[in-house]
Image 1 (tube, rainbow, N blue to C red):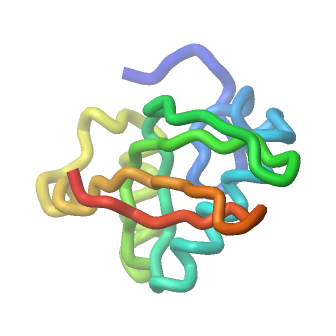
Image 2: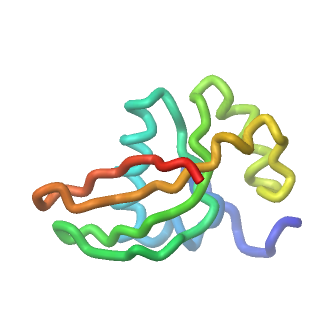
Length: 113
């Protein structure tokens, strides 16, 4: 069920309202960088609270899918259209993107549900 909100062109961000939020995008770039180091792409589902500010970056724990780069092209259109229709083969890829203040720097790790 697609919402009427305009879709974003940013990888891993579904809605333009999120990708237009410069403070959040600074944090999300760190999340995607952490995912990339694992050979993955992170696709955002929703915020899970645990908010904070580190070095001027607004951080928020989020839930989403940590998908292998090789599967991202298959996963993205399904996720963009309706994340409730994500196939079972990707359900084990659900993760929390958890952040922490690592000496004034933002550190992100991905935790299983």
